[in-house]
Image (tube, rainbow, N blue to C red; front, side):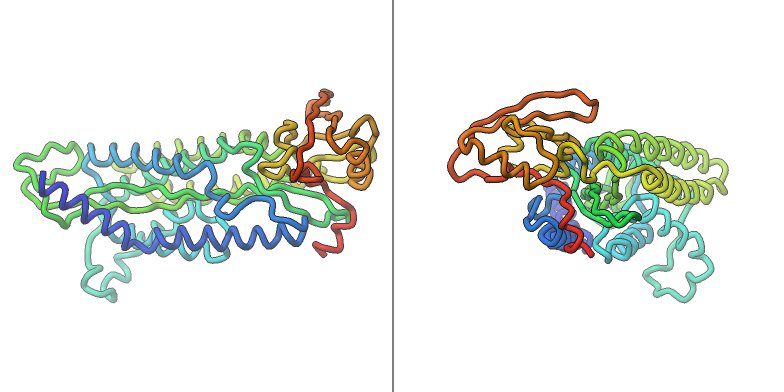
Length: 392
């Protein structure tokens, strides 16, 4: 028991020394500051708080890491140190632009694999500490975990709710100001793995994959960063996200199947890696092309006002307003622009009643009393024509 407690303490120490842990905090902070600066420029206010890129994903990352770690410890498998170094390098490289577009495991794991597939050709020029061998089993473990992480990415995308996407403005091809939503999330998945350095040992090896019989081993906690970053303008962001999430899920299952078969047919390791990278890139291209081929839904209307975003903790939340709703009347007055909306609110300064049309075309009525100190504009963000000068 003493040895196990000591080794657990060492694994926590290794986790705290891993640069990806601090890069996770730094890149989230930089991404949040960049987003908030853009929100203030386009809307005149901060819409979502700092670190909201992590909202709803931290617990998911911990649970995912726990489940994967249990399976890895039961099977007695681990990722080769060279593979871990590659993941660290490509994760940092692919997120230097403060975007999470390339933080899919298909990219961070895939490019790590491509570089190390040619490892025998440049191994001789590396320092002695890197003079080691990658076995076929290492590749099977690596690509299988890559597929599992693709499935987790799909579940992250599918779980987005209406208050977890970020509004933006842009100039359309016709020169008009329209809105879009950026779907951008990041999570840290801690993987607990065996490590060929430590003070633990067993007299009889019982792990089904790798036997550590009478060989010392330890534990390591390795943080894996998984993220996504894309925009939606032609539909409700959460609905589009749920439909899109089916494809990374299928890609992940295909990658796992190819990975397991590669244990017997070695060249399938390369096929598996290429399928992951090309497949994930094709999915991103397909989503963007389809989205841009359709008219944007967040644009000024001739009748009513389309809700682009709802500020957290404002009266609009209590009124049940959601992204994509169209407000047609305020206190019985028809509105077609923000000025008319704010003017109608002043008809009754203690109470407001809204006529709202949802995305299905169904009309509902919502009302609420006003209280002292509350947001005087209800906390709703619309697309306004004068915002064009802000985003030019």
